[in-house]
Amino acid sequence: MANTPLLHSLAWFTHEVLGLETLLNQVTVKRRRNLARPVRRRRSAFRDPAMCLDFLVMVWLGATRLSHIAPYLSRRNDLARIFGLPRFADHTTAHNFLNNFHATHLRQLDRVNLELLRRSGSLRTRRPACLDLDMATRRVRRRAGGIARIYTWATAFADHLCVSQLLEDKTTESRNLLLHLLDQTRALWQGRPRLVRLSPPCVSEPLLRALLRHRFRFLARTSWSWALSHAQNRLEDAEWLVLNPDTRARDLGPTTLGPATRHNARIILLERCSLVPGAPPDRSALVTSLLDADLSTLSVLAAHATTTRSFFGHPTWPLRDGKPPSTRPRGFAAYLRLATIGMNTLALFAHSLGPPWTPARLHRALRIIPWPSDPPPTLP
Image (tube, one colour):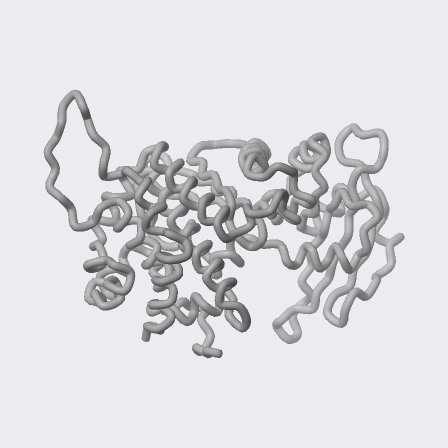
C-alpha cells in the first residue's frame, strides 16, 4: 500500500520548494525541430517534463524496470494524478523516450540535477568536506552473436548526494575515467575537496599516483591482497590494535607509491566481525595519504563513505537490474541520470522532514513495489 499522505507531501515539496516541473521544462527530447524539413507531429499527452516526472515517480514508487509498469503502475492513475500526471506512460512510450536522447539532452539533465543541489544540497557550500568516488561495470550481450557492450559507470558523491556521473560504453582506462569525473566535479566548487574517498573498484596505483601529483588527499578502501603487495613493512612487524568491540586494525606504516623519493602513502589492515555467526571476519584495507591521522578516525571516515549501492539502496539497480531500459548508450545514460535525480530529490525531502526520516526509510515508506531486501514496514 502506498503512503498517500507522504506522496502528497512529496508532490508539494517538489512543486513548491524545488520547482522541479520548471527545471524539467528545459529537457527538449520531444521538441527537436528540423527547420529545413518541418514535420507536423501530433500533440502527445506526455510532453518532456511529464515524461521526466513519470520516470521520477517510478523511482519513488520502487519501479526498477520498465517491465514493472504494466503489473504495478498501469492501473494506479490515482498515484499519477498526485503529481499532476494523467496516468503512467506505458512500457513502449518510456522506452522510445529514452532512445531519443542525444548528448545535448544528457547535459540538460545534468543541469537539472545541479540546480537541485544548488538550491537545497551540497553545492551551497564553497567546497565539500569529502568527495566520494565509486565505479561499476556491466556487460550487455548483443543478439545473434554480436559484440558485447561493456558499460563503465563512474559516480561522485558529496554530502550523501550524487553530484556528477559519467557512463562510458567503450574500453577506457578506469584512471582516465575517474580523473575526468574528478575534474568535472571540481568545477562545481570554488575550492577542491578536503578529502577524496575511493571505493575498492576505483583503487589502482596509477590513479593514486595521479591524485598525489594533483595534491589531493585521499582515503581508499581496498583488499588485503592489494595492500600487502604494496606494503613495504612485513605483516608480522605490526601488532593488532582494537578500535572497537567489532573492529581491530594493523598499521603497516608508510609506503611509497611510484618513483617518489619519500613516503607518500600509508597502509592499514582492518578486520571486522562477520554478521553471520561462525563465519570468518570481514577483511579490508585502507590506503591513504593522511600519514599522521588516527586509526579510529580513518576507520570511521572510510566506513561512512557513500557508494552507489548505499545511495540507491539496491544491490543491482539502476545499472545491473534486469534488461537495460534502452539499447542505446545515451538512452541508458539518461535512465541513470533520471534515477539519480529521483534519489537526490528523496534525500533532500528526507532532510527537510528531519529525524527520524532518512532517505532509505522514506523510500521504503513510499514504495508500492517490494524490494527483496525490504524489512517489514515500520513508520515513525
